[in-house]
Amino acid sequence: MKTYAIYINGQWANGVENRTICSPYDGKPFAQVQWAGEEQVESALQSANKASEIGRSAKTYQRSQWLERFRDGLMKRHSEMTETISEEAGKPLSVTRIEVDRGINTFDLASKLALTHSEEHYPLDIIKYGENYHCLSKRFPIGPVLAITPYNWPLNLGAHKLAPALAVGCPVIMRPASQTPCSSLLLAEIAEEAELPPGMFNVVPCRVPLVEKMVLDDRIKMISFTGSPEVGWALKQKAFNKRVALELGGNAACILEPDTDLDFAIPRLAVGCFAYAGQICISVQRLLVHETIREEFDQRMLNHLAKEFKTGNPREEGVLCGPLIDVDSADKVMEWIEEARLDGARVLCGGKFLAKNMIEPTLLDNVKHTMRISCQEVFGPVATIETYSDFDQALQIANDSKYGINCGVFTNDTRKAFKAFDKLEVGCVVINDYPTFRIDRMPYGGVKQSGFGREGVQYTMEEMTEIKGLVLNLNSYEPFKP
Picture 1: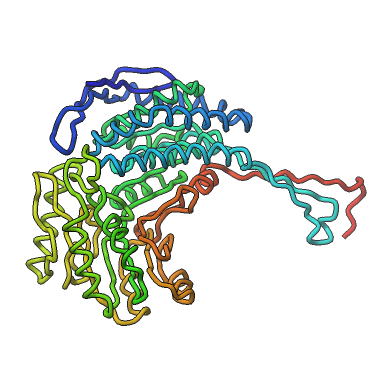
Picture 2 (picture 1 turned 135 degrees about the horizontal axis):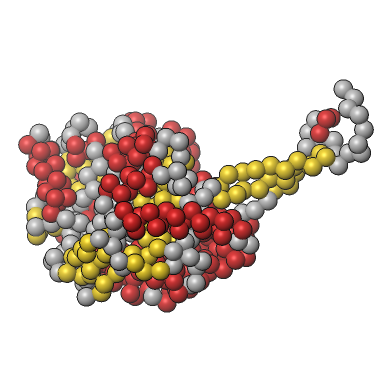
């Protein structure tokens, strides 16, 4: 069993307690992790604060090289990182490999963007008084960033905070989710091998009160949080005088028009709804199917789930849906399913435990919009199906949510595609694919209760910098004449 210490200022330190990390699938102990106390948290704050000058003074090529070495180190340890995430998160290997690939791509993209994300120059002669004046604008790092990461994509969502920060020269203190700290600490090992300057990356597993201490500390200049809306919005209130980026929950809808290619859509939507037991912020939770294809859609989706979609041990190849992160999460999902059933919803498939924290992929219809299974984020292997008759009605149903990250629309009508883009109240509209689609260069984030600010490497780089202007007067020195 591997043992992890805390990573602060380029060194490994012991904490105040030792925790055992177990597999969500079978409870098998996987690793021992040191948990930080007040002393270690203070050391991390001092370290990041001191490293601010290192990041600010680092040359562009140096920051790019840091990221290249991260990329190369992650590539070298691809298998180890894949196994680590799969064990601590209960994530199927096929899904985890995609996460590691995306992490590599994120560091690679950041290394390239670091070379181009610099000064802009423009003349100011847009009015008479601006003749022979020029402006140079440059972005400067905001300072230490507190990155609070979730359990479901511990590497990729961590990389989306760390890579942009390093690209612009911001030190990072990462507080990983208590269920999945090992992947972040493995990333710290890669940082050590990459010879990242001390203090630029610190990993501090700790209890919630110590997270709150860091949130309120004046040395932290920005907080990047991914997690539940309840925690995220409360955090933003506490950190009212800091820059805050929130990537929160969702209950993504997907609209299927009559011309949908079901041969393509069915297997994609099965993955979008149920891969990794639905523990994805943009997992498909609401399927809106046109009335003319509803019967065929139901038959084909149920047949696909029964014959081709594999649920079970996340260590087995081909499995797409494994356990939920813990028993409490599984019990909550099952409670919501039963609550909906008692209120008139019909279970088309699933709806049963396969193990203490593993639930069958579940499809429900005849749901009401007031049911928690429909209007809240389930974060489990559950999707609802609803029929609509015209496109405007589908858009209205999709918008009938307090969340809004991504929405999918299957249509070959360009006018409908652009209408959806204009009308849907979400951060991104995905045409002819599931809303679970994400490439790491895209702007990513939510509206309404789903978040604040945007991720995506280049957009996070902007969030983590302050822009400053330098004005140059190239006129000869003469008295001002109005």
